[in-house]
Image 1 (cartoon, helix red, strand yellow):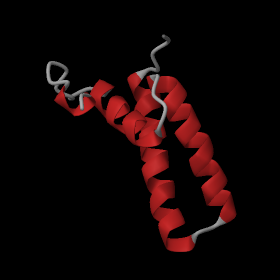
Image 2: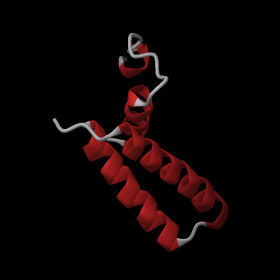
Image 3: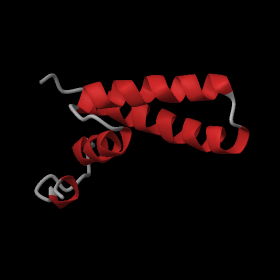
Image 4: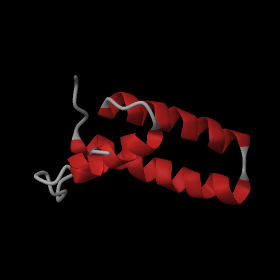
Length: 75
């Protein structure tokens, strides 16, 4: 599996979280489409099938993450 660069992952996560906040407040169709695009890209970039797992996996791969602790990925 290809691994996205940590800078790319951080950017994707930040964009998704920002748009999720905007969508929750405004509910705009354009924000929803962009969120869907970001969710798909996060899933592809992390090898996951849903955005929640993708966000956890992306954050786990970012610098400063405790790489020895994979407990958030099990369950």
